[in-house]
Image (tube, rainbow, N blue to C red; front, top):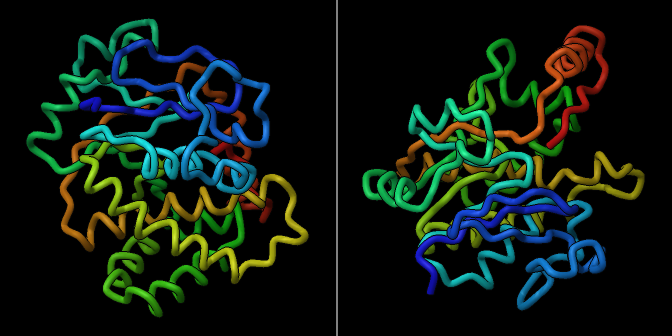
Length: 264
């Protein structure tokens, strides 16, 4: 049994971290088996790989839940990785030299329950409004209804998050196996139920990825309701960010009523 496995979800050839804790994971392998034939795919064992077009990195999360027996399990992305809190690493030029390693994760997990990517702050709009400027806000309303019906104890934390400007996104975290599995056992049935209440027949490929996006808003209410403590790490991106383009898209959404098409 491995002590720590952090899967790096990818759907295409890309440079991978080379540390022993990292497991490159081809998500959507059932749909595109020839893209990364030599990489571990999310289509082995108990899996939902065929749902990757809508579930995005969640097919990798599901695979880890059902098929990985490590003591600690985590998920990051090929172009969004967890950085180290070590200032000397943060100043490295090579983004792959900035990443957290196993000993640092174990140290963090010895004092807090889980490790998360640093919280996002939208400053001038709420979590609910930010989602609505990108996608269909009624999806969040329907999820609230499901929580009311199935697990109403989560409603105070859910409502608090919707009114907040801060949220942990990206589905990036490292957890003890029992915590990781408990979160997945709670999350996936709720997303499945939401799928029965959303009409996807006319959605384009961008809109169809709603499960991954709704799930990003599920983590904080689960942590809060269950009293789970966390440490945060910076997000490291190997690719440069076009902040001018991102800012223009956001302003168009905010002031012109257009959809803010960010990458997830």
